[in-house]
Image (cartoon, rainbow, N blue to C red; front, side):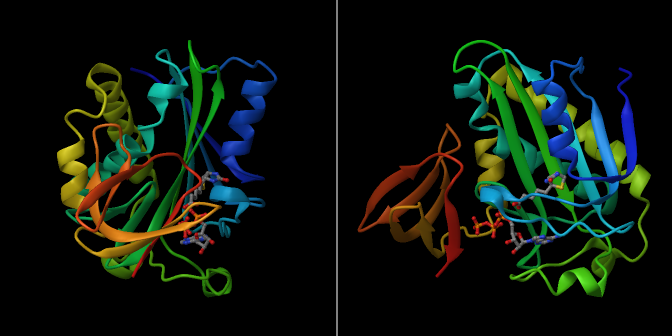
Length: 246
Ligand code: ATP
Ligand code: BTN
């Protein structure tokens, strides 16, 4: 299938641009991809900044219309994380690890982040903008603004071909989204759990209100995180949650 890949040199945020087009009812077809060389206002979760210096890294957004509604879109970060794994594994033979709900780690350092934004009703069609920021070659000047351990592909692989990565990522994403549409997370949970960066570790989960400490047991069939506390399993859902080791 033919889908456009739209390139911009500079943009505020590839996610913001697609969200604006949705809000102003501009036509987009599923699979429309937008890539920029630089973002002036790259966004992470909860209003945090995503460092997006010129030329080096990948700033990528993918539009997808999903007919099953918002409720079903909740597990989507899981499918997207697996798509990033698939793309990097098939191109370079590396095995990244996944941190719930939406981070990609390589050697315990953050390589990429996923930001899924949606527009729509609880029932009925739902418009999704799937943003992926993936570090390829991070300049020194930007890296000092990142307040956690991070890495980029070049540190592990040397020079890489960004266009090839964009094409593979788009294919992997389309395949995982098609799978999600057909069978939801049912064939993805076990695979995700094998790639869980915090598998069996003591973690602290923070919602705005309080913190929970327990052993990370992976995800359930809805994509919620399972914490074991005093032998009891508790599941957590929703995006505004943060997870830390220890
Ligand atoms: P959480 O704190 O909720 O567990 P998180 O640490 O991944 O998740 P997010 O809001 O998802 O936080 O992502 C933003 C964070 O990612 C920033 O606070 C910064 O630490 C880090 N970050 C920002 N830009 C980059 C980048 N280009 N590469 C790697 N990490 C980055
Ligand atoms: C996170 O870990 O917080 C998610 C980061 C997502 C960054 C990507 S870069 C492309 C897209 N545009 C944005 O402004 N954010 C996402």
